[in-house]
Length: 256
Image (tube, rainbow, N blue to C red):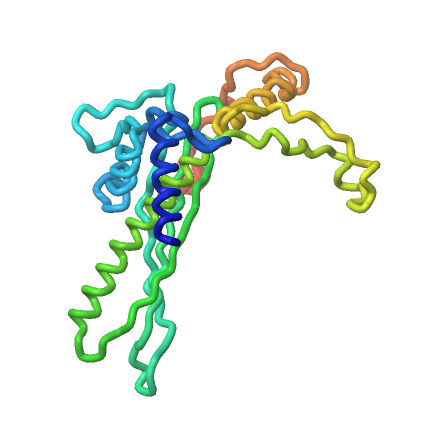
């Protein structure tokens, strides 16, 4: 019975995907970000895994290190540094020999979206390995294998985070107001519902719209205002004759 239900659900999902149906409030990564620039440590395995998974998702990737690499300024840019790997001893025996280690792998990528401030994307994974006493080569091989597996999982999670940019903003989300800081959470009469201005937008579109709205409402200050109302001119250094720091003063009589 359970097998029949699972088969029925699988056939239903396949039929829905075949007709172009997808879950609400979600867009495929290649539709939200059809093209992206990727730069960084292109010799590292983690960089290559992220590029590979982006291309598998259908995204056109302008990757640094490829032949004919050219940056498209109209699309987002992903900066990928080399992940850091910390090998930390967490357990020792009576002879102070390491028995267990934790591999702490972390990365902080930067996403540059046109008309928006940079977005820092951080993630980390921790894996545990056992130290094989008397078999140092086997221990080193295990650390290398586990580190490579962690790179693959970390790359998959970071690409999944990029997919969130294709999700639609929640139309039922309430826009926070300044009075929310002083009102009582138990008093429903003090709440004023405001329509979400980002309804129907994807997250990447909402970020760009929010940044444009903040830039339009910001005050503009000219260089003349910063110069105490006086007209700003090109800075000029005062006419000072340079003097060597270790130069002997002219008052010293060197004649003996």
